[in-house]
Image (tube, rainbow, N blue to C red; front, side, top):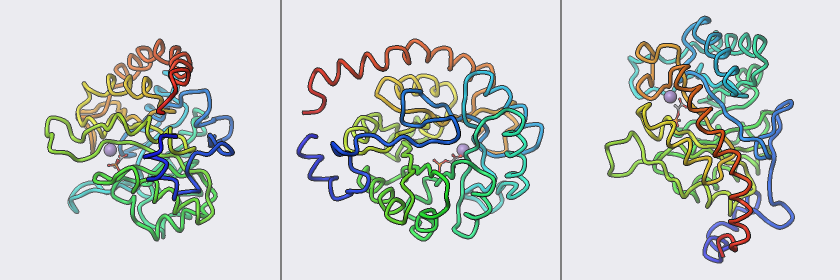
Amino acid sequence: MNSRWNGQFSCYDLVAKTAARPNTIVRIGGIAIGGDEFIVMAGPCAVESERQVLDTALMVARSGARILRGGAYKPRSSPYSFQGLGVEGLKLLNKARDLTGLAIITEVMSETDVEIVAEYADILQVGARSMENFSLLERLGNCGRPVLLKRGMTATLEDLLRSAQFIVACGNPDVILCERGIRTFETATRNTFDVAAVPVLKTVSHLPVIVDPSHAAGVRALVPVLARAAVVVGADGLLVEVHPQPEKAFSDGEQSLTFVQFDSMMQDLAPYLNLRFEADKTFAMAGGFD
Ligand code: PEP
Ligand code: MN
């Protein structure tokens, strides 16, 4: 490993890549995150209704997604915005799993909700705003489910790895890192997709890395091209917002893809996915980062 990064990150020993621990594969049933397959998680920002979530599940599954996303507990910055359906939303996600066989990822915001969310979901998502909620991270250490940890809006990669180490140290080795864009001076996009975060994290850590192009872009037209970039720089998968009628979405409609757009994004990614392993080999032969 490059000596600069080695010095910076090796203190996070539980998540640092070593010869003995080069790669963690997180398994959910037959799905392996961090292995050979590029895993796409897709669905609405928020679970809004049975129709919305079941229709979305069927369509994203048909296009090749393996995991359904949908928030039942939403971190909204206004108390007047839709806060999510709570347990009712979790039950709808369960129905979607029964209908399609997709695994379920959903956000948990508070340690008091971990038990109920873990009862219904296959992966628990920690949102960007919760990345340093250490009582939540501690509780996730023994939730019995994999955790997808989103990078905070103003968090460095070191901050992200510190939080990941916290969860692992509390007993849960199944942590997935997620780059979802960071706050910079740029305002044309909602956040700035830190494209270098992916190869840096893949170099210094053994944990899988997922990219969320939707929250990075904030606008749906950019989502497919950021998704393509994620494939090319070596991400293990995507977390993408998809809605049956984005213009009517309760949250994040501007960045949500329609079913048709999601399907064409998946088709567009196919040739890049075929090149993925070839590119990795060439990169390794060129000496990686050293
Ligand atoms: C979300 O996934 O809908 C979400 C709230 O994301 P973030 O925590 O990255 O803002
Ligand atoms: Mn969202």
